[in-house]
Image (cartoon, rainbow, N blue to C red; front, side, top):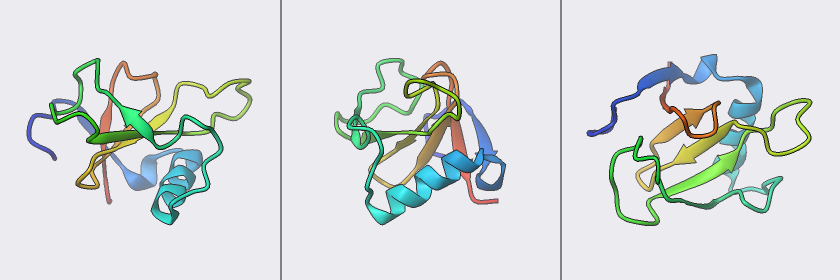
Length: 98
């Protein structure tokens, strides 16, 4: 787990299928369904480890039945670390390969 991260973890296999699909799309370099995807995540909430601006990028995790982007996101760090939130940045879990 990255130094400075105080949240929990979630196994890749325990993520919703839409989150796993988002991670595959990120690995492939897109295309992304929303124009905000791959934009810089500024970590204003301070829940992720403090890093220089531009370190984190965010991606939408499609929420079935939602008429907008919903609350679920994947945030990727420059070093490839992956975080998942399902409550629109109120909390994060570090994604582990289990």
